[in-house]
Image 1 (cartoon, rainbow, N blue to C red):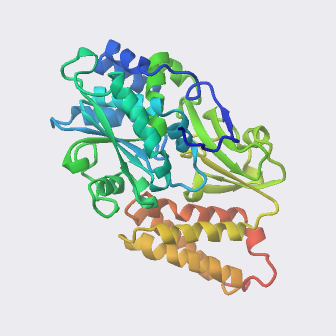
Image 2 (image 1 turned 90 degrees about the vertical axis):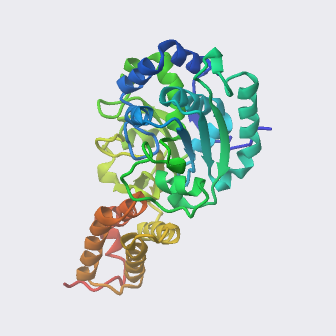
Image 3 (image 1 turned 90 degrees about the horizontal axis):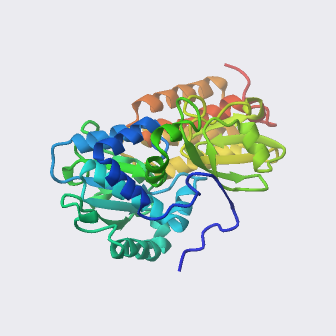
Length: 405
């Protein structure tokens, strides 16, 4: 039985939510061959859909070029960013798409094994996903000598995570896959050279992999016509919060925040958090900005807050999350997030000076450049953006603070 996942939310889109016969993308890849398949993906200019925005073709090319007979394709299904639920929809309702993307990635890179790192909270999907994997095996889409090609064998297995947000970072994910504590590795070396069990590994997000069959079928050039010059194609967005029509929307990159709010029926909007807890929070004066890598990038999470919401409470919620989820390995993230949360609590109590606030802002900037992984590098984003964009609200609360240097 398929898991019942947010069935009441909206599904809109013309590429990822379009029909795809299982196997068509793989057949197209075999028809084109490894090199031309990679060139189609390169021509699409697609960047990873997990949030970092690394070119997908480059990651596949580097893994393919690595001199090692053992290689892996890893699907990052550890969807832990607050406000993000697009991958959950793909896993539950369109699993054949990302599985086919994994097989295509295996064909291009020469990997023979795929690993799905499934978020621990998605354990209820395990039976469903294993059923789909077995169906792929029965249809000879997984297994040995696929399509009669002697050097093309590929199979997939699932590993469950244990609820750690930091394991969304690819090297921490690999550490967890190997049975170790989920902590980011020093880089270089990179996973494309030294990944799972020290073998070349291509780690890609669920949505990224699900897009690969569509790129091959419609062509890289056709895909690149969607979106903008630097942000090509369409993207899944998890839109939630104070709106009438929350859901998963497939939209072309480059739309304005204002047009998105109109589409989802949001009214009296005070703020929009772009990119989940680790993203930036923009006020009404910036609603003409565009969702794209060249302006407001996001891995897919968009959270809407109306004028009844306290932005100080929103900020405190985010910082509590980061204090809880920091792996504690590096000092800037471990101590820095605690100090930023402490600062928010002092603002709540009115026990601060603006000199102290400026010191915290300097600390936040230091965290962005000195933290070991993306968690510590991005956790200061809500602190900096909310204090800057909503300073009139936060610092004019009755009894808040001492107005002097």
